[in-house]
Length: 221
Image 1 (cartoon, helix red, strand yellow):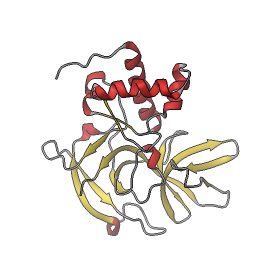
Image 2: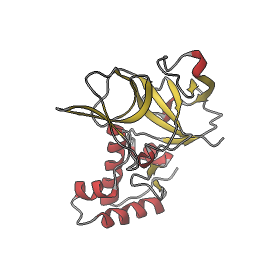
Image 3: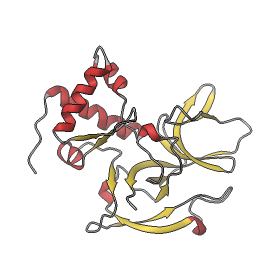
């Protein structure tokens, strides 16, 4: 594959997107790009993003503030890890056999056998970290992070996560996908959709991190 030629500024923005994906699991907004690179407005960031899209490095998704997706060769050519999205099925490169978890019953383990709907074979290199399972996304609370209803979220089982990462968390008897926020005042689970309210974890709540989002598969079926 021919190397895609980018300007210095385009390369800088691409690396900023890849870093944000790696660190938080979601691309930056136009305003965040503008603030980071010293642009006077988000429109300047949009112009550079449009140029990257024309060169086939990224895909822009309308209607969401974080609607930026890396094309496959963006990570191939620039060797930066990221939170990548792929289409099913992936037939020829099957290495991981991942269980697909549907709706989780209250109070029961995520990977309980009765929650597993089927399994998918996928290539391990598609993910920034090796996932343990796929979780079917319900609802649109993480829409602006590019996570849509019906998507398959690749999850690595862990009890630890950094501030700002997208996690699968259990609060009480509910399992939810949200962005983790830790402050001196406590822990909150933040949606990526202004129509939804943050979940504040109370001292009396039973709270546990179940896993970390490490990739996303857009399910076509």
